[in-house]
Length: 372
Image 1 (spheres, helix red, strand yellow):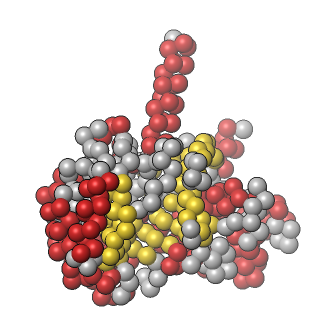
Image 2 (cartoon, one colour; image 1 turned 120 degrees about the vertical axis):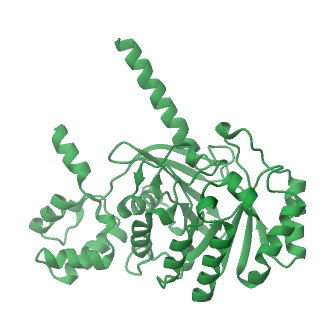
Image 3 (spheres, one colour; image 1 turned 90 degrees about the vertical axis):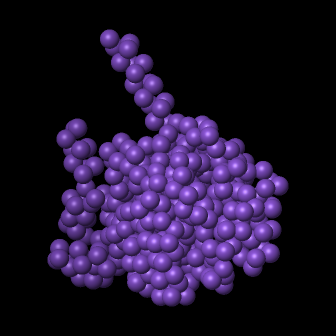
């Protein structure tokens, strides 16, 4: 039995195939293109969770599917629901590792924040995601499965609601898992499936300059967000280790390349840390940094969610945030103060996973102590 389970866990998720890849696989396995179209329809429109439910697919071909793929590679471990409608999920991967996914109710629809890596190596000193170093990349199937399980949350409750927006801002650096990220985007964006519009999908990067340039050449109309968090190298390096490799000059050279190539707006994320990056002089520096791209730059000021392991940081006061905001606006920079979600649950990205891992470790130690 154990060997059978392990074999199942080693199979990739069929969610990891784009529609073109599924068509190619079907043809290679003796079927015609329309068979792949039928399977795609079962997966993303009817949203079945078992190959056996694909009633217009022959039993022989279903066995081929079952022999090579699983559908859903994730297990729901925990769910936290906030008073404001935010839902935080903790999913367990086939290798028992944990990832987080967050559903946020917005005025414009249902937005899901997905995770792309187990752990993170970027080294942001204020972030809960980086408390545990990167273990591995998620496959495209594991990323897509997060969306499918959130949608299942509504389907099972008979709610006529659908995921309408995606932000790739969960645990990990998306551009450090580039190929799986692109396959995921092509899958959820496909008009024949979930059909989540490209302009409803946002990818956030801490600043991998070479990947920003590569992303500019994909032709995808996806929104790009930059985790900037500081207006100069000194401050940014002190809170984001990635700035040593890609300092602001290198990062902005890549951003300007992206703007020239796509003519699409870029969002700059800026977490407000009291006494670190929230002074009026920082606001003026940021305005100067963005002055040549005013029409295509948009600043998102983010209230900091305190992390117990990073107690050297605290959130900026409302007064300081408003002063910062006013300086940017007076200098012609488009900006907004982000609305908070899920403040009554483990709001910071990575917190729920970190807490659960600590509990698991404590429980395991207790069991071992009793056994001894």
